[in-house]
Length: 354
Length: 236
Image 1 (tube, chains in turn yellow, green):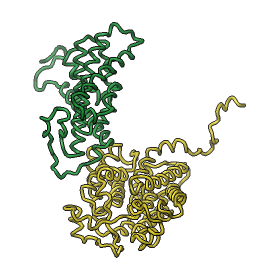
Image 2 (spheres, one colour):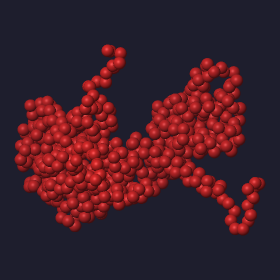
Image 3 (cartoon, chains in turn cyan, orange):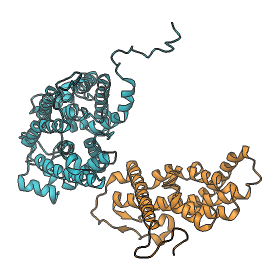
Image 4 (cartoon, chains in turn orange, yellow):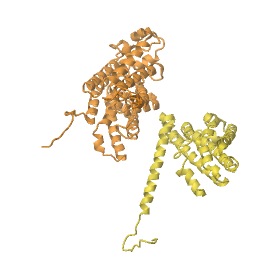
């Protein structure tokens, strides 16, 4: 009888990288459905294109690096990156836009740094930033939301969608409209109340802006599912949303024409929920300790608001995330948790002070 | 270390100031958004490098170690000012585009590095050859980065060459990627400079590795067949 003396814990959870990544990919499903409901076929085409680009580029990069292809492909990390890129790029984006985004995410942001686990930056956000500073026009052409009834624009059918993606983009202007954040960005004279009354984007919305409120709710639902599955902890998402809400409450300005918008508006528009639950919780590129995660999340929330209100771009998640990815090792250095059994500060000259 | 051939190989490839020594990165990254800027800065650097190497090698026995570096910097600054005035006179437009990066040639470590590491220990002729080889090595990297960035960023090559070569070069521009190419802006923006330079360095390392592998494979050849091999002596 072997006298194995294993120490606790005796029961292990079966949280492998592959299953975690798969549940993250599945958790984006509600948001993908809501996006498809409001914006038509474009989202689905984005997802299909992005997954095929990312997986083939992953194979290519692994082949170049002489790594076992199937083994690394099965960890599903390329799949998650692909889905995140697909959901952040506007629907009906031309195919080459996604191809370039996937190239930068998989080959440059991930494999050039040594593959999964070694990438200092979030690959999907690198792709987004490269695309938005290189191709500002197609990256800002968000289609009009389906439920915006009095708009002249209608969404394209499936064949038109395909031709928008693969062939001519001359008609794209017929389908695009300003997102809620664009509306706020371009507003210089109207009070918030007037804006909510006059702009169809807000007057037909339930609480934060047509379509985007539901997209954000769907991301929130997916995020809560992941939280329940213990894929990540609450620290980073909560502190990011709290910082964003606090900043927007401070700069609400009583709803004047220079107001930045209400906390509710900021938390439920643009990429807020997407970022809070799917981007800043990336275990590789974010801070690791709990206090570190709180600082990391709160700084991102702060930066998102600052760039949204005073920067040149309507939304700011990708820039904020990349900036804080730079800072993550620094944050980790100063927030090392106390190891059990050690005192708070290493005793200086402990031998001399007897 | 002083045969002309060796100096040339060193400057152009083995000890290339931009790809191996990683010196002069500031102008390399900042001005290479197209070919003409890269060429302009490259020529200016060659001129300063040549002048400073010659001057430093001439005075090398008269300057003590204590005042060596300040003297070199003064010499380099003098030649930089001359170059700046020349560009001001003959290629005014380009002078305006390159702006602060012409005076900044003074701080280009590649030049001070050559003065300190080579010219102050060698005679006039090798120093001049070294300056030309190093300068051309730097120029080639500048032009490679510039052409890759210009091609990706705006789809052209050799645009605005008249700024450097006069009105005869007005229509040297080649639209390699067609008129409708909209441009991949990140290539022209600062991140593009880092990415392109990084890929060039990686490319050089790959070539070097393959060369050394090839040489290692060729070295260890033993004659086949029934030839009796003596362990001493050389088989030809």
